[in-house]
Image 1 (cartoon, one colour):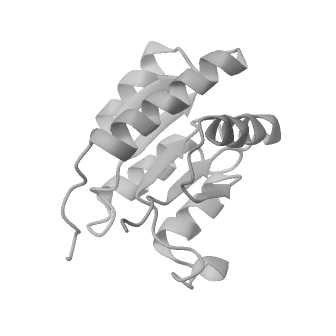
Image 2 (cartoon, rainbow, N blue to C red; image 1 turned 135 degrees about the vertical axis):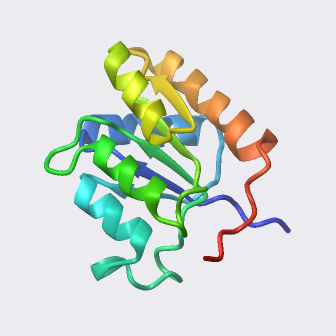
Amino acid sequence: MEKLAQILLVEDSRMDVELTLDAFREAKLLNPIHVASNGKDALDYVFGRNKYEDRNIYPLPNLILLDLKLPGIDGFEVLRQIKVAPILKRLPVVVLTSSKEDGDRALSYDIGTNSYLVKPVSFEGFLGVIRQIEGYWLSLNIAPPENNP
């Protein structure tokens, strides 16, 4: 049996976290989802630092869903640090944000995001986005080979 892809959701809004988790449940996706509520926690998680050292409990994610507007270390800096780290640079990062700003989109792609999605306002719209993420990133997309620096 194939192992389910691990997802790291980086989101500071409790309401958006619940909306995302509800949408995953509604779409009947069984993928384990780990939540980081700020940029520091997200970086600690992906680099396996501090409370996230044990990779049996906190496995390296196969996909990151990243909000840009985070307290402290913002999503741009999280993305930047992931994409310059040899062991993490191939990790798919999907920006999932409420920002429709051209500058945010351009900077995200310049830094290395793999996709940029704007959060819909309605639950049905959000459910559609989650189904698209599942359909492409968790089903169709062929992951890059593991990075062994």
